[in-house]
Image (tube, rainbow, N blue to C red; front, side, top):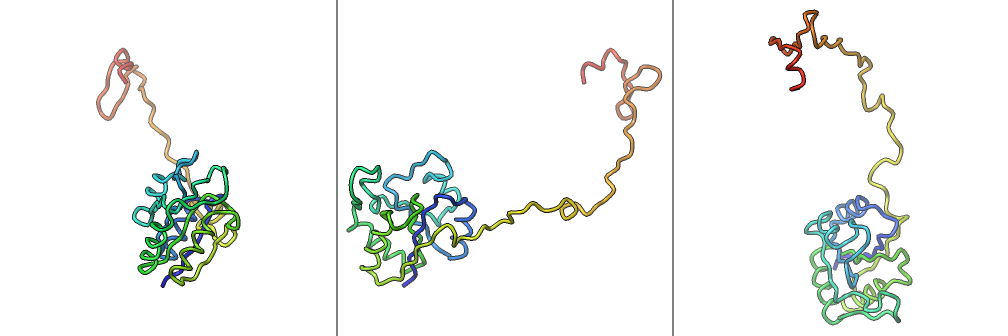
Length: 180
């Protein structure tokens, strides 16, 4: 049985999640009741664009009371938990939610249900454990452009002394200049 990971995306960048998914060879199971967000990258469609086939939304594992209207209540655990157990037989799974803190998030309850049903190992990931995939410092220009001489030959003058506009080898009278 593969490992079940949990992750809250608050404070992360999409590129960090993509790198994590690639490094673990995992499938992201979005366990939000509704995969909506004010930030487009955190919507269900945003995750599908980012992760393609490595993303799945399971509303059956969402918290019915996600708006804070009551205690954690998983939507349809009898439907969602066996689905995740089947997925874990194939590859690692990351339960994804918005909450930064796992201890107060419904994904911890879902992870405990899946663990009880399958005996899988559970690892709760946090922002500090996920390393940035890109350098945080700006590279020096010399590293990007080893060339040192950026001078160019002077451009030819657009008109000659006879008042003609010169394009390639064809000369035009100045009254036709406004066409260009």
